[in-house]
Length: 430
Image (cartoon, rainbow, N blue to C red; front, side, top):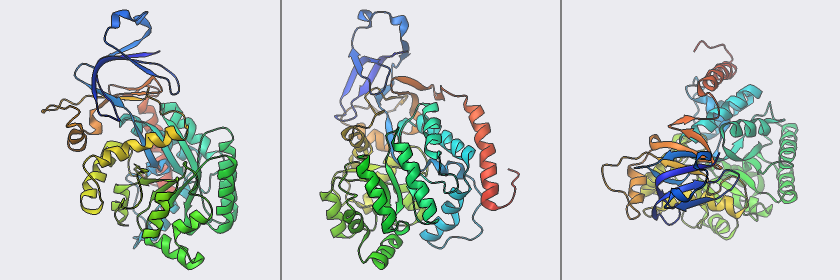
């Protein structure tokens, strides 16, 4: 059923222009919206779902530029038996142990948790980077179906890697190709230091065959660079460039913290996009993002830390004051750059009929001149009241509409206990 947002105060996500209007939202993938001052001219008003937005603000919904849905059940998980001393040990003793424990039900639960959290925080599109080495076959389809069950559009990939042996790498390549035959998606690679030349060449061949792009972690920690120099006598970006992986405008380079000036220049001249993940970098103590020399193709992700893009934008701004050349408002426009990436590359599901209604009763006026100040210092995901995805209402009055959230939570808690038990090699009574 199409939707009318009555008495809306619409904020253009690009120009920040404020428009007082009723908004007619058409249903369907990448359908349109229409603005009207007079509802009396609309025929068959009874066919519309009408939401009165008096005093509310309406704008384009958000998109997560880099997520790890597979980590969603880790919140509250027992600590590893060995305390990690560095980033490589964080991967080895936490995330690589967790992803090996995932099975079909855990993957589904993780995706449902992520999709609900994204929806309730105002995001209707997720670019996800998945890993489950002991359950690879069909894993991307499980995530896709879970996301769609909530109403979230997606761009998925499987994290191909040699770290669990060449057989697992081949399975990752096979899963990727099988998925790309029927879905929009990317070719996922873990990071240069776990992907040998043979696997990287096969991934590059897939990229060209399906006219897709690579989604890979780049220089998140110095370890990535050190291993690349030791094994290949070159730096990470130089290696990726030699394989032609930066030639696609669909390629996403996550993190990009420890780069040389030469690498930054290569990225700047390439077609690739960079995705910044501020809070994850802080949590892992790997360094601070600096945009100098990288160009304008930068957007924001969460790296699985959470699903709240307003929070990610604010963190990018605050941390950037000390460690990045970031002007006032740059973080907001990085948030929105993902829409350019999706539109330029003709990915479906992020059209103008993806909207968020913000119940933001600010004590001070908000307008186009000071909107950025409100976004950075006033707004939070708690102000998200309604969310529309592809013209369908997926969150109404802060409640997801397509599933019973209580039933989902019952399922996900059960799977979390199973996951934690396998992760800790003991049963848990949580």
